[in-house]
Amino acid sequence: RKDQCNLSYVACKKKRKKKSLMLMTVMSSSTSSSSVASTAATNVVFEIGKYKVVLRRAEPETTCSTKSSNIPVPPPKPLLIGMPCEAGEFPLLLLLHGYLLSNSFYSQLIQHIASHGFIVVAPQLYTIAGPDSTGEIKSTAAITNWLSEGLQFLLPPHVQANLSKLALAGHSRGGKVSFALALGKEGNTNRKFSALIGIDPVDGMDKGKQTPPPVLTYVPHSFDLDMAVMVIGSGLGEVKRNPLFPPCAPKGVNHEDFFNECQKPACYFVAKDYGHLDMLDDETKGVRGKSTYCVCKNGKSREPMRKFVGGVVVAFLQAYLEGDSSHLMAIRDGLDETVPVELQIVKFNL
Image (tube, rainbow, N blue to C red; front, side, top):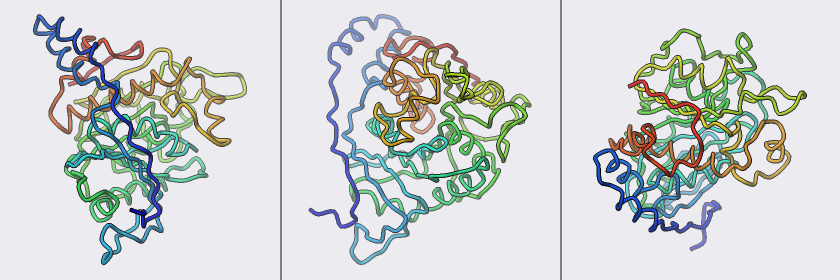
């Protein structure tokens, strides 16, 4: 059937089976601790999940709907939506892009998360922006408010979004925006977030050079968020690629500082040999896409970091949206042998 909404789809990917890994795990599950690892590994969060995924784009001017007699409220900003193909009701993740990046650069990460049974909504907040992120915070609030009245029109009838299980995540400056919205810096939302994720969040150029509105207070545990928080950091983010560019995630305004201000429950992971943009797609097109390989210190390849970010996000969402903490605890305790990166820091404040 011809798509009346002129929305683009990406073909569903088939899950790659990991029979040998599952068999090895079952054979080794002789103690209670290894049993936890077995439970986690039989549904490997660092690999593509069991759901086939479709990506759909929606523009603010979209006027058609799944019902010819109704016209839905268009989204405030362009969206890239990743969703399972199969019927069901799924939790929702709102994912914000980094500074001057395209939401399309996160396509592989979006597909990874969605394949484990989540709907991922990734807005394009802007194409050009200055240092002030106030507009992005307000736009994210507007998108959050739009979800209840407009999102379902962009989903197939057999796919339902469970808006009572809603999480917010952001990368780089998008991480700053996520924390700012959750802290009520700007904008009001009619939906309560249940979980917050900062993916290598950055609050400016340096301590004392925060971009407005500042988020970090440098007071330990000062973030009054009333939700579970996870902070993911890159070990190379605070390292300069060359003398011409500052580090992409400078010490003093990066992941370490964000975690230090989080209250319980909070968890913190830092991938040792990977950089600030290593969770993006392998191929990022255009001038901006090519620049993502030039401005930041990078690891040898993006795939391991992208798999790690996708997997640990899935584990965190399963724990705090669905009540299954087995995968997250297995990663914390070093029992999940499928973790694709070496972890420099693992901290939990529960």
